[in-house]
Image (cartoon, rainbow, N blue to C red; front, side):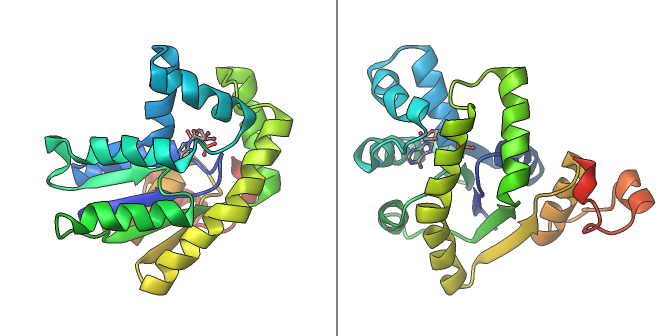
Length: 210
Ligand code: ADP
């Protein structure tokens, strides 16, 4: 399982889990959101272009995003695999990624979807807005990002489900519990239960614990 994708609605904890997965699997994590934010911070041409869309909660246009991903995937540190976070999120991006990978006789091995309901996601993101101050974490923009997830990215998930490479993980619970479920779903060796999961019992009854 070398080429993995993590997908989920805004606020599902993708970025946090992606960091842990990449460490455990020893593959590089590529987050399109992080690449865009770092370009915004450094005021690059790409960043100036992307910011307009990001602040509104819109997708950065495919022609910009696709090229950025193609360039990133041509670097040498992804030869042994990668974990993509935040891409693809439109079906056109799925087709583009397929094409880029096929050029090197590669394909995705597994797609991991983190799930959580809208109400939970909105409360998490509003909490993060107060702490971290991301400019796209205000309520109207959050609702728009969630709307786009349902409207466009769920079709991406459906495509991978049809291919039989989708695995879903409940994203509700504390970070360690979710990591444990993720490692089990990815069948990472040594995914032993944390003390907390042992004490609190199996996942599923953890709705109130975030
Ligand atoms: P979120 O948790 O809201 O999905 P991300 O950090 O993954 O946060 O992305 C932040 C923003 O970056 C998105 O709202 C969008 O404007 C832009 N972005 C990231 N990935 C993509 C993508 N694959 N296609 C288009 N826009 C993207």
